[in-house]
Length: 321
Ligand code: 173
Image 1 (cartoon, rainbow, N blue to C red):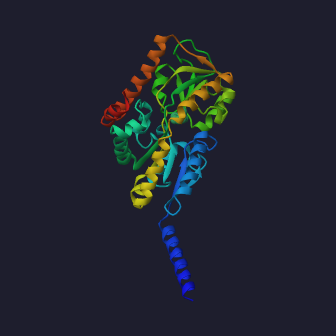
Image 2: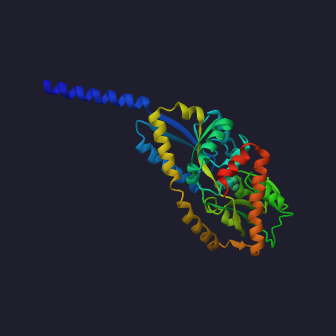
Image 3: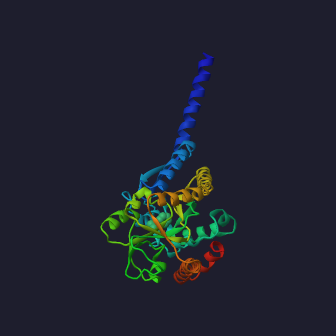
């Protein structure tokens, strides 16, 4: 009799504990600005699975999907307003929230260095103040952008060519005479297929995810800038998290960021894959190549400082070398 009372009390406590834990468990709604068939997103969905396993009773992430849920260029606004809690995006997709969003492409210091040199705090100051966002972690870096073309050029002159862009490439490509057209990644394949564009800006990787190799003849080397893709969160929601959930989320996002060396080998393989797919490299003489990269950087910072006279120079101190 005593024994069974003891058992039933233990069971009762266990049940109460489970109820209390479940009451504390927070579920965050997340969307991706990149299409779901992109490797970035699949890798992030794997990370979410791990978070959800480890976060039982503390925190869960509910992945709602890619641009079909929220269009690419609306994800930043959705995070800012709290329509969703977390966004997986690059800054170029939410310059409609603040111009600073696109400036992280100018990073020459790594995310790890930015955690140490005050960069991470500065980013969070700006993202909080102007975007009502918490910048959780950068999960793609060490990745240059390139110009991809279907017409051959023998010098960095894009006069007469129509190039698909995002804000990442606008001023740089325009400085070479290109006429430009902004599209989300999801629209590039059709634009290439229809011959609406002669080329596009894109990182060294992830062409194959969207089958663009089928419609791409050339890649211009060298690459320039440093692709940034990150997890951003609505700041009110972040602040309202129970301390244990916030600590858990900070740890999980940091652990994800710490895997960024992954991209170094991944990118080497992607370049090989492009060669195997018949994409030819266009490159110039060493002096022209050097000037090409320097011009990208110069135009990038000039634009940043013009668009954000206070934060542009502050960001330069922690991002540039
Ligand atoms: O070209 C793009 O769509 C773009 O701006 C970008 C930025 C970071 C990673 C991938 C693409």
